[in-house]
Length: 244
Image (cartoon, rainbow, N blue to C red; front, side):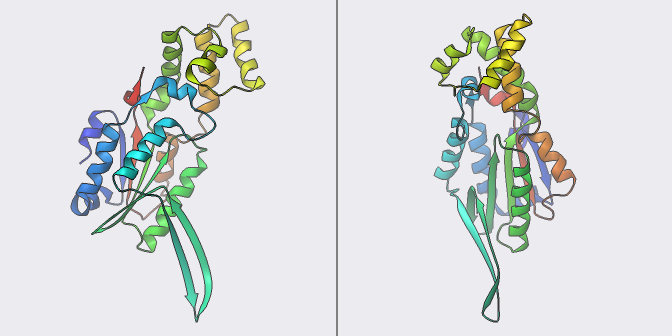
């Protein structure tokens, strides 16, 4: 069902018969997600320029899903015993698609701290246990994108011929960086490292480090059973979505 994505390098992991459920009961819903991802791309400069809020690339993917009928929704759960409310919980999901056969929940974790995966998967688990959703979908940075981020950022800087951060702030609207970050780059420059190499090393380590949301962090959680028994579709965005 997801061959068009895997052929383009997307990471796909399926748990608890999610593919069979989507193929049997939600083929149109699944196609909406596939089409949105196949059309998705990120200009390399956005990886450097975005900061201080949600990345423009994530905003574009969200708008595509909103336009396809995947709005944000807040699920509210209350347990009442003899007229007394004993439990009250609320789970906000970024994208929810309702269909005749049921409801699909979808979260995008482009670049958060990796404990956000626990929150998302546990929310899916609770909502599925209450028959509120049929499948949970999580989209994050794939393995090839995470592993290739350093090379992507470095090639982008070399292509544009940048030799200092001031040029990047002006051209890419890059968020002005802290003294700690600038000093780390300067220490590498003092060792005769090129600017493109020095900046990309510090920038990628700081912004897209191992403790952020990416494929390996997500895969390790579902391999431990986090989110079970909710049917899960996990999607990792490949390096090929980036346009240099």
